[in-house]
Amino acid sequence: MKYSISEASRIVGVTRKTLYKHIDKKPISVEKDDNDMPVIDASELIRVYGDKCRFDRDSTQDTQDDTPANTQVSTKVNSAGNADLAVTQKELEMIKTQMTSERDHFEEQIDYLRKKLDEANSETRKLTALITDQSSKDTKDSAWEKSIRALEQRIANQEKAAKEREEKEQKLLDENRRIKQAYSKQKKALEEEKSKSVWQRLFG
Image (cartoon, rainbow, N blue to C red; front, top):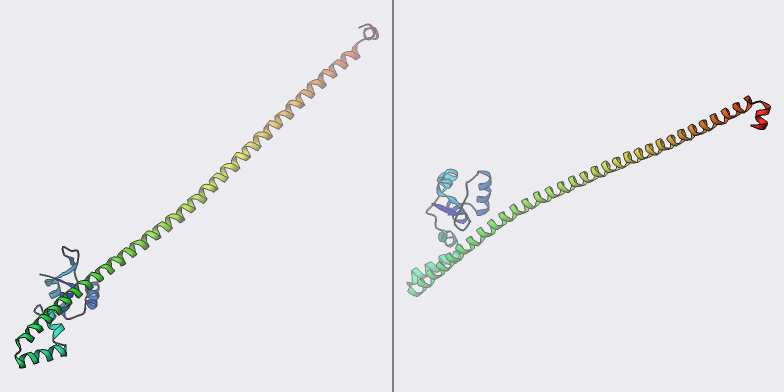
C-alpha cells in the first residue's frame, strides 16, 4: 500500500519537514500517484523505520487526544448522557478530520510545487550559464575573425605596394634603355660625321 507524505509522517511519527529530509538523506524511494503527487510504499517505510512504523495510527487521534477542550466536552457528554451533544461532537470531529485532511493535502501540494520551482530555477541557472558561455565564445570567435580579416588586408596592401614598386622599377629600366639607345645613335652619328672629309661635310 502507498501513503501520502502526510500519512507517512504520521505512521513513522515525524513531521513532514523531517520526512522530506529523510527522503533526501536516508534515502527513501518516492513514487508518484495518478495526480502526480508523491507517495511512499509501506515496504519502504518498514525498511527505513522498522518498528517505529504504526500503520494503525489514526490521524484524528493525533489531533483530538492532545486537545483539552475535546476531552472536557467528551467527558461532559458521557456524564450527562446528552445524545444531541454527542451527535454535535461527532459532527465536529468529522469536520476537524476533513479540515485536517484538506490542510495536509494543501501542504503536500505546496511542498511539491516548491520542489518543482526549485528544479525550474536550477534549470534556468544552467541555461543562463550556457547562454553566457556561448555569448563569450561568439565574442572570441568574432575577435578572431576580425584579426584574420585585418591580416588578410595587410597582406593585400603589401602585395599591392610590391606590384606598384615592380611596375615603377620596370618603367625606370625601360627609360634607361631608351636613353642608352638614343645615346648610342648620337654617338654613332658623331663618329660617322668625324670620319667624313671636308668636301663630304660641305657637299654631303
